[in-house]
Amino acid sequence: MGLRQLSFRTAGESHGPGLVALLEGIPAGLELDAARDVDPELARRQGGYGRGRRMLLENDRVELLSGVRLGETLGSPVAMLIRNRDWENWQTAMSPLRPPADVNPKALRPSYLPRPGHADLAGVLKYDRRDARDILERASARETAARVACGAVAKRFLGVLGIRVESHVLAIGKVRARPPDPLPDPLNEAADASPVRCLDPEAAQAMMAAVDRAKDEGDTLGGVFEVVARGVPVGLGSHVSWDRKLDGRLAQAVMSVQAVKAVEIGDGVRGASLPGSQVHDAIVRAPQEMRTGGFRRLTNRAGGLEGGITTGEPLVVRGYMKPISTLRKPLASVDLRDGSEARAGVERSDVCAVPAAAVVGEAMVALVLADAVLEKFGGDAMGEVRDNLERYLARLAGRGFGER
Image 1: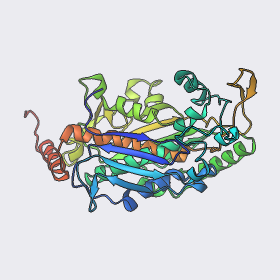
Image 2 (image 1 turned 30 degrees about the horizontal axis):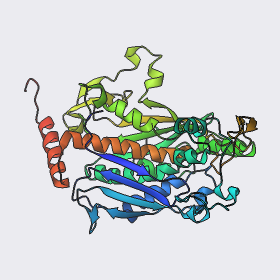
Image 3 (image 1 turned 90 degrees about the horizontal axis):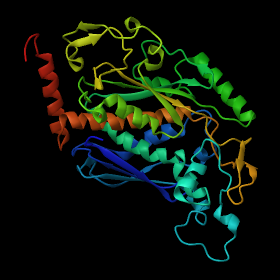
Image 4 (image 1 turned 135 degrees about the horizontal axis):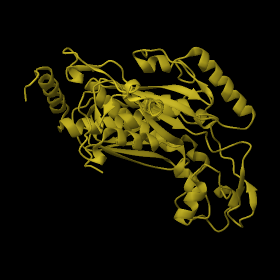
């Protein structure tokens, strides 16, 4: 992959002491307040109709451990900790120490019945483990709380530069919404007012009814979320190398979210079956549009990206999430102790997490965009990044036809 300007790592298990997030590359001088900028994003991730009992236990708050002093970033790595409140019930099972010889095996909460669709079995085989607890604790979507913390800092950085990353839910199960066109602005304010983060009230009611039916049947539901970034300037990303194409970077980031099995940019899926005249976006001159380079697309079917480069139109990325793997009426599986036929294990889980996945999708898109902004404009301090962006936009606005 190309050289990254912004990078992040997460650590921690679902029922361990907590989650750690390390974000490197944020310039110095960004005003950052955990209670204002990060905690509300963590709360948004915990919400949504169809979430399980775990969300009632946790009340995520971030502790800033490094990289911030007196309310401003220092340019050094930002380290954050999110404590797991449920850790007090798992200290024996998730202890880093070897258990005593007389420990009750049940207290270790082993998992020998891998769930179809989860990382349980593939992870056990890859890492030569016997107890799937060693796999599922890290594979759990609980890890996304740390991603959202990193994404919240990236969103704060982008917001100072006039870029907003928001989302809404397009579908849950077979119920598909018909969102308004144009989308409301601000988008999150409208979406967060719905229990399923859906902009179509009639569809939202049908989605909740579908979740209720799935819960009664011991089943789960997936769906589709859409992330929209506004204010993105033309010119992020590149066409010159495969790993610098921004659409590829965004697709990889959103695909990495647990249970996401497909990613779409703009009208990519629908456009595959249409003639080019009904897919591509006509271009007109628009001198007042600074962030689009003095041009405008009459439509935005490309989703704000052409040739791996942003056009300045809203960036539109969709994630397609499969149903959650834990079923209260489990599918057939095997017992890892002897290979015998069995039913899959049941972990505490959600019925539907598409609204929460949309918030995680925002975080991943924001992290990729922040990296692309720093790649394009550089700067060790926020003032330098802002100045570089403003000079770039001014140069585009002053460029005449035929000039180099």
